[in-house]
Image 1 (cartoon, rainbow, N blue to C red):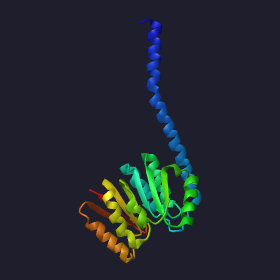
Image 2: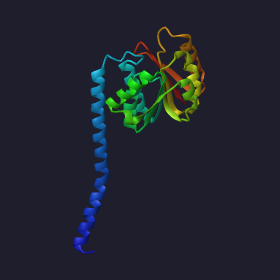
Image 3: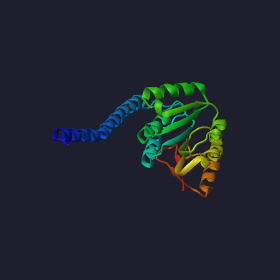
Image 4: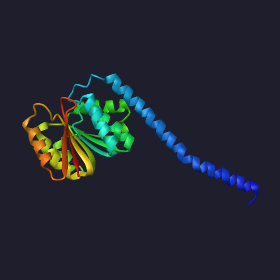
Length: 216
């Protein structure tokens, strides 16, 4: 091989070695852009999430749980107007995952869709309008993360429908389980704590409380 041919070959190898790094840099830039967009949206809307939405502390708890465990297949039962869904989808954008979220109220569903688009997380969300009593049992799964925040008296039924579809190492979380809980919540917590393949704890960093049941 001539010296010219050797130089061309060496240059080609160098370019090929650079390609993955360039792709990674592009992905990091995209992630940084999304982070800025979501943060700006959440900062702008801070203190305005009143329509059956989670407080910021609980949204951040869900986000951090997903990122820490690298969950990618999430289900949310009860979208409301999208605050928790934005936190969940933001985390899934980091892990390469997607969220399926279910809401029964058409107006809240429309508002959530607009919020997802404005926050920049819509590509990571499959938002469904309908009754979770019917939709959740029909979903194929599997899921490695579930967040239940719909009708409290149905929490146990949601768990019965979704828990078999939760992968080992995955978690089923539920909102509003602390303080003066309803009969439905008490029944739900007793059910989760009795599952032989679940470890259940309750995070009370906010007054609402979030239960976290992880599959062994």
